[in-house]
View 1 (cartoon, each protein chain N blue to C red):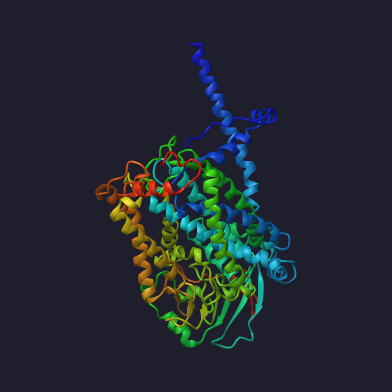
View 2: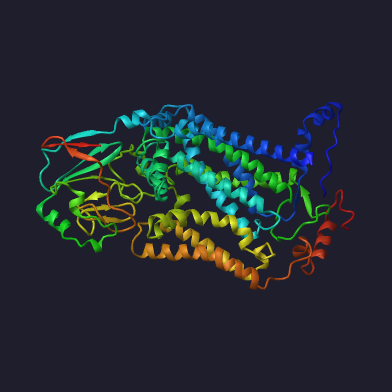
Length: 170
Length: 428
């Protein structure tokens, strides 16, 4: 009888020790893992301001933000109407053009293919938007994926017009 | 020849060996019984050991001159090539050495596939071998990033983006791998650290690989168990050591033909352009030894699917000892498997070729067919063959295929009769 109680008590103590040990080990390992996450100096560079006054309609510039290219495109009327009239049913990742470009004239996107991270080429591909040379993804004039392996549309970063011609990204 | 226990010859050896049995270990390695019918396909284990040591030695030397920083990495490689004494040699041996390492490992793996070396009781050798192969790919990939050329940068971008295909946590995982929001200096630094570390892990696994080999002993081209205490085996030293060395010398001819005459043949010229995060090269191609997997990745028309199939193409090999249920090891006695083995070889080479081509038109169609066949081979054909294939009769001993031919013994006696020397009495 006492032996059984002893045994139970011992098992409880073992389990409690393992549990506390596992928590302690986890707490000790976390800094070793977390040190690889983006550090303070990388996060500090998280906004960029761009003067877009010199961009003509139909032209596009590329700026670097957080090490990634950002496409800033001043679209022509034709490109805007082409993007607007697309039926959402034809899209792999349905999104209205008006949701992607707050001001339809300006399209601001992260210029990184959502497939495996290459930089798409402008004015190329079957939808006259962007075309990724790595694995053949076609994007339309709104930067939406139309054909190829990429799963989603080109991502829109957080941005705002701080002045008439100045865009703040991030 | 059976393996004898080590008997120390001196008091000092006895004193030392009873405290640390290194002398016993060395004796075991020398007298380790190997089947006498091992052919030259069995010399690649030794060649691979040589490759690993070469990579570690040249790598440590390169690390003395290389700078792991995005602003200096590319220039430091050029500094090694132009200024450092014999730096060009160290770098070309290291970069071509990676290719030679993979060439040898592919031959080694296909030898295992042909002769059924992965079957019981050698499953652990096979699985540890696959772990080594995975680490080799990770190491080679990270090493290719270090020169910080265009292919380095974009190769790193594409491969690390594979992890962004994981649902929900994909983005956090890639940011964690990068240490930022794109491939940048933190990424280069950690790749350098890991590129230095992993070869030593590989070295540790190689020791386990050999250890697990020395428990059951070598497979052999006939694939039947050898009788260890018989004349079917020979001590590893000097017989196998000499054979391995001869094969190694032949291998070195090829190795140094590349190093001295075609040092950049296996590389990509775009990697002599410094990394630029704004411009992607028109065709991103990995190093040749990763091309079959790259072809599988691109053959699947879905991001997550491509990644899953690519990893599955390697992990399916872990299940091989159980998927191939045939009790006969060597393809020599498996007439149907033998044909499918060569179809698989051609399929993998075809996938490699397609991995270097743009993923469109006929290339894409062929890549899809080849990918499908690759999985059919392992998941459908092998289990079916194990059940239905009629195998040829196995010889009773590994000597039979040589000695059982008519007239062989007479011819042998005649030859021995002409030879005057020791130990021929019994033959006469």
